[in-house]
Length: 425
Ligand code: AMP
Image (cartoon, rainbow, N blue to C red; front, side, top):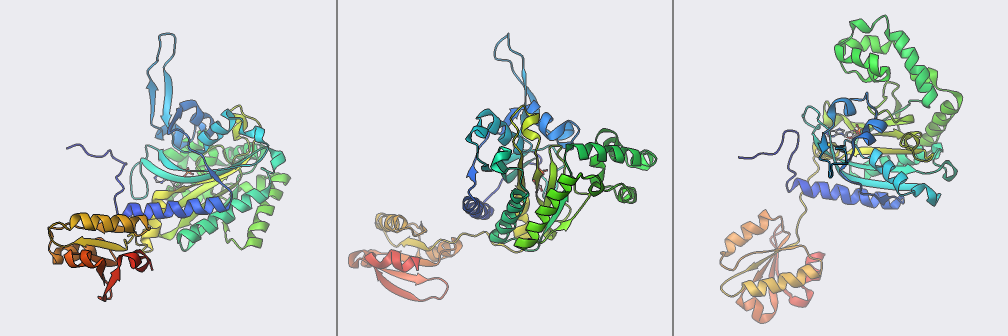
């Protein structure tokens, strides 16, 4: 038997009802903040990710699904392609490719779709997973660098999580500084790590060598005392960066979004500058991050684009759903009516009635004339219907239908013309 691939999974009803409900809410929130959808391809030129996410990151160095595409002609070279491990790089590529900077305004773009990383699968961590993300990007003259963007993004996320019904989330905030701060900080980390690095776990040692910032998110318990004593990023921020971060915090305080500062949160992608953040949830166990994001002021230029500072985030949709389920969120979308034909020749009348009801926006399912009444009742309950509507010979003749409320047991006769209104209320 052929099975699904390790780290991938099928999403089935009724869970998909919850996924769809979350996505509908999220689209609604995005629209209220004037975001519009962008859809980019699921595979891109490998160089896009190595240049933006960074060669030395876990994602690029070991987690990407990459292959050599066959050359189409002898004169052509085979191209290295990669299934997207994240979507910000693709959005910024599209921004540059379509000259969206020429519009002169902020582009507020959102996406919902699958991403791919070859990680060790576990609960909340998959090789094909789904992200809901958004980006604000534009020329500095459009206000793209302003701390007001950071605060607005974070306020939107608080609203979005509240509105999809997630309770007890935590916002962790940090500033990883501007490019020069990062260089100075990395140097300080290298110095501080020199005398202690040999005591660390091999993976942390590798990080210390290739990308010292990454040492801060080493999870090995034995290495934590060493990491705690390392220099703090806040001591290396230059004045404009410090000021920017202070303004973000002031605005968050003003709008009442709670947060805590976590100076070790540096995030796993190289393109971040200044504000970085993560929202976590207690119901998720080890993989507690529901979403992450931050500023990426130099990303466009590193992809040979115009100066286009930006800020964005990606929600792990799989984890958001798991967190909602851990709170007891029920997926079932109930239907209003189950139309039950009773007796030979009744299928066509029942179909007709269901057709009218569905066109009148009543969610209805349809039975089968050969089923006994008892079986129709069982099916109606299984389908989660609120009412069962009986379509028998007498009902058709009178153009009036027996309607039973499956919760209260109350039964009434309703004329065809009033039926949709009755079922919808
Ligand atoms: P990142 O792009 O690494 O900043 O991740 C953003 C969010 O995507 C994380 O906070 C997770 O919620 C989610 N995420 C990242 N990797 C995975 C994965 N392998 N499986 C499920 N969710 C993931």
